[in-house]
Image (cartoon, rainbow, N blue to C red; front, side, top):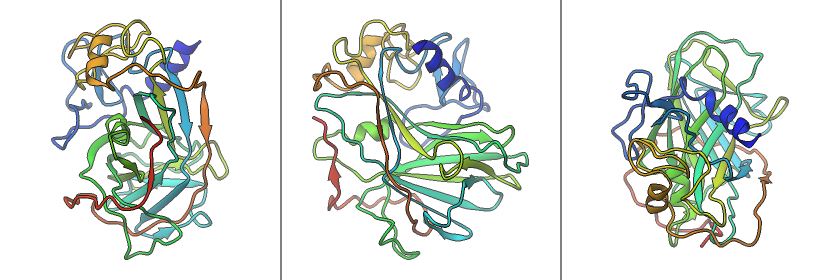
Length: 310
């Protein structure tokens, strides 16, 4: 049952979410640059057939944003005005979504995979086209309560995260594992993620805000099992992303679980007992004005809440 659920989670992303980039981050596959040989493009990464990017015994956490903000050609959107849909990819328009999550993991918890997920609205006018996505870390404290069109948080250099066809309707699932793992570095702080999108569609692709249908934007985090760590069975394979396997058979870049242990977090989890499946709820809020995500300035390290992991 767990394997079937994981297959459903990742299957729809295999042929529709893709990207190519020379920006920082692991190699990413796309429809235009397919994987070599029998490997398949899943979540924008080349993986061996019949392998999954997450082990079947991983602990799954789902977090809704405690604060989010969106801006586009229409200006600022707040919790009261954003409506039921979040639209990305209209021709000639760039939109940005800013998300902050209360990610507070138990001591010793190790991130196996992290996905930024948005559900497609089924009843929405759609015209053919593509939407390209970039994701970056927000580098400083921000709040929708104090956001103005002239006041925006700084961000890191973005990674090209994916490319989605507007038709037919389909969920957006972007692999943000490297960005979430960075929050666990010593003295690191979590200020959230910035999702930037532009496209070529007359209508754009519409996703649920969670106001009247389904769920809104959320971060899905998979943790390594507490006892067996990154090695051993579980069925998730490695890929060209350099992360190796999530336990189970190896991928094109390494030796399966052992590769994952070496390139992932350093030690087996020593958590606070069984983690189970957790769900954190937050509230949507206002948003600041659009700006380019490319910002070479370093963070000043001021403010914010430190992620509760070792």
